Image 1 (cartoon, rainbow, N blue to C red):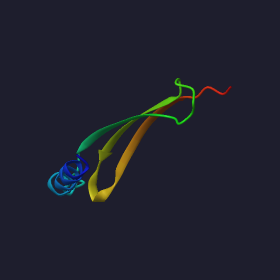
Image 2 (cartoon, rainbow, N blue to C red; image 1 turned 90 degrees about the vertical axis):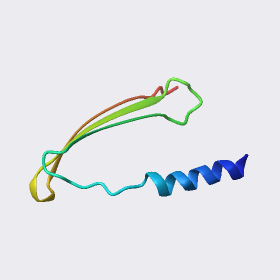
Image 3 (cartoon, one colour; image 1 turned 180 degrees about the vertical axis):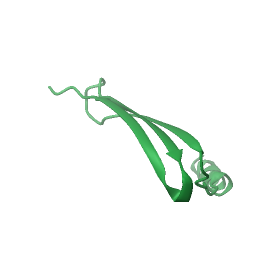
Length: 72
């Protein structure tokens, strides 16, 4: 099972990876979520990014991050 999983992982790494070009007026959205490593189950974070590329390799990043962490 581990060998099959590692074979699929290696295949996807070489198959999916492509160069991203910073073309003018290109827009991208990124969303990240996760759990903070504590014993409490209510700890998490959410991050959202909006990127706008302009001429000569310049870009603007707008980001919003929300995290919830309970401290006992």
